[in-house]
Image (cartoon, rainbow, N blue to C red):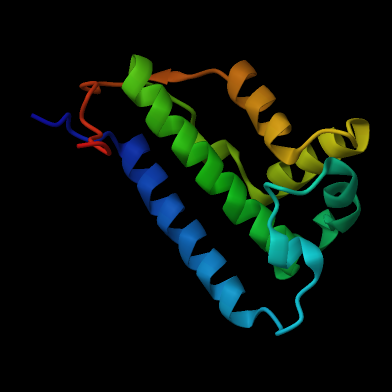
Length: 144
């Protein structure tokens, strides 16, 4: 039997859906000859590149910022699934506003140009307080 989703986990699912929709919208707006960061993706980019492309003052009106924010939402959502399955804990994604995400990644990437943006998120996941919830492990069945 599946555990009843908490209001927090419902918010996570809704935010993930919005992030995915935003990313799909961004893809449909991308010009035929997109900038390398837009066409290659955040995950494979170096922090040196990402730090110069993030424009926190432009918020989510900037396509790189929007893509970065959607990518972070997906990354943290995946981490939450793993955390829930491992120990019935998760991160509160409501704290990850666009301003906080953009600032956090830009600061990290400026300080660590040789790293990848995922390293910033891994550090965030390791150090951020996790919330305990009711979750029956083994409820995510991705493998037959």
